[in-house]
Image (cartoon, rainbow, N blue to C red; front, side):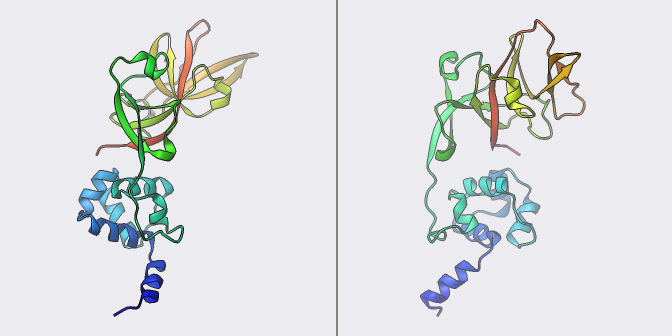
Length: 220
């Protein structure tokens, strides 16, 4: 029988894949079930558990969420990393379209979506995407966390994915600013190569409503 010291040493020698596998088995989940819950490929999950692939920080975050443990448990940070604690979540408004004002002021009946406590803030909301312009980065049905920043100067969010209104119509695009013939031009780019960039014409009503911070949910 292993001593307490041996048990501690064995735990400290675990890889991230070992911790994922151990927690998955504690929850009686198959690899297929965990992969579906986390929104990742089952083959990728299998290679992580076998120690053949090193997961990215985003993958660690989504696996931790699916396994109901803090990311530090999988990373192995801290003395209590092998003592899983329940995740603490907070709810944010979940919208189906880009709001024309503060989310709480523009929606009569709000659907709520839980996010990890450290992601919550009063000036944030979740957005369920119906746009195809950001594929393959973001897909229709994805839920993203958005920082509500009405009328932020586009220069300050150069290259970021933003929730925008152009003449009252919602769009989700990367915002860039260029100087052309001595004037500033705002260009909205999609990651989808078949979607042509959109130049915001002079006189158009344009506003950035929020900046996309993080993908928080994806269905397979």
